[in-house]
Image 1 (cartoon, rainbow, N blue to C red):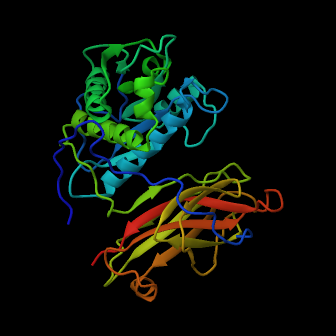
Image 2 (image 1 turned 90 degrees about the vertical axis):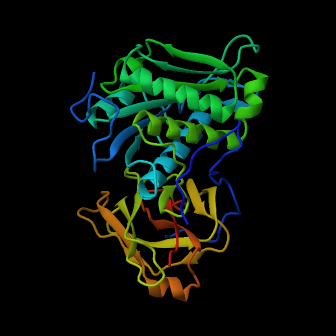
Length: 379
């Protein structure tokens, strides 16, 4: 049963933990101002998803801060992906929380210019912009959490204050305050924007906390609660029973990123649940592989998102418009018959990912990989 959740956290005591790097590589065949979209208040528009642009700072050739065995660009992305997962889970979980439409300025370790980041947000246009960072200083004695907006007395400042408050509760580090700064991503975004600095990697105190995946979960949850409070929504941690997308897709040889999605409900008695994947190379064969454990394991230049005991679905064909473009689509219907035949009773959780052939890659690496979807079978 799903319950509305009122938070009572101390440090890192509460966490919806995102599973990483579990299990071994599986033997799967390789051949396979305000914009016009915003209100002038923090109140969400009924029936309209709130557009959130998440900005994992740095990336690629720009590592950001690095100290005590931690690299900022890695931590920023870990927190950002977890926040994306939580917002998508919150949207799917209708018991509480809000409805969100989420994009990231980067989902992999690539360099993205400051101008490109704000342009992505402004062109969408996003309703809110959250930039995730971690700090550094010449003295290891400096430590703590701080959050920035461009100016005080604005919706950006309201969002900033909520993020700072939640991070202090979630991470339990020293309070360096809510501040203003003339950062590009705060100045050039057309929507309310905040930039968080979770802690100092150069501080042994902060680094000891930030090195734990539990802290990454807590930071993501803190940003989620901050967004909810900013929009007048009671803080709510969504349950994992609602279908959600996780993991990172492999960029195809044509430069497209396959995007998994779903519709319907995986109900044991009468399932209408369909898993689909767009931005697939056209005219290629593919299949869905699934298991009852997740993973995030390097695999053929991408990420294997499912754990031990993989199962394969029948082969499907992507179709499309032109050879070599990304107009293909893969689909699989998780019917009640499929669930029953595979012993997936109510409360069973499934982790699924699409594979397809990518002939544009070198021999031995011709595997396309989507991100993945997790779902729990319902009565």
